Image: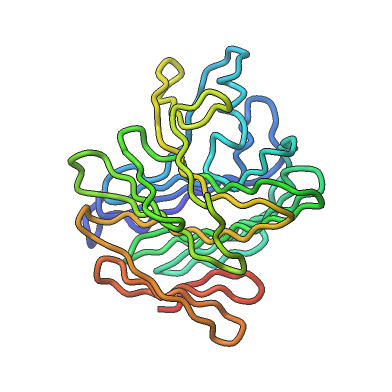
Length: 273
């Protein structure tokens, strides 16, 4: 699935953002286990990337590149990957926000639900990852970032990624939703070899170190509410939360632009203002 905010008619082509989301039948042949994965471009640059193609040699690098941990998804690394089919269960496309919900079973006894909300003006992505398992798991929502960027964790909830001297930075943060943020809720993995993590194949011959941001939980269930916000290098993001009945609302100030995002009791994620 592909989407974009426009074709540059009102704010210039590089001012638009675009995204891709993977889902569908079970993996086959040369396919990757990348269902529910996201890529995102905004402000004229890559924001969230795919880790790329490691070539056709049968080695650990190809195994990693084809597996779920090489993609921006919620993973359950303690369970064997089933490469299962993923269904689109809900969607709503509007002029200023697109919403999609996907459901699958990435491991035996595990259910995974991803809600994705892509906003326009301000341009940002919100994901709600919900997982449940019959056995204790590690639930890890991964964000693969470009190799030219440096990522820094600032708190249990927030990190910033930026290329030196760039005019754009990305603020990635998680908002507690039905679950407190534990110690180690944000980790950066880069240039790791055991297990492999934090790499980008620009082509099958070139592998570069690249930061991967991990929002982590453990137990029998997880609820990870992520925000990926690209903005100018001097910009900032603040937010407040509240409930309106059973609806959870996040009020955001993104570099001076105000927007509210809501989550219904049933898990729909939508733009309020």
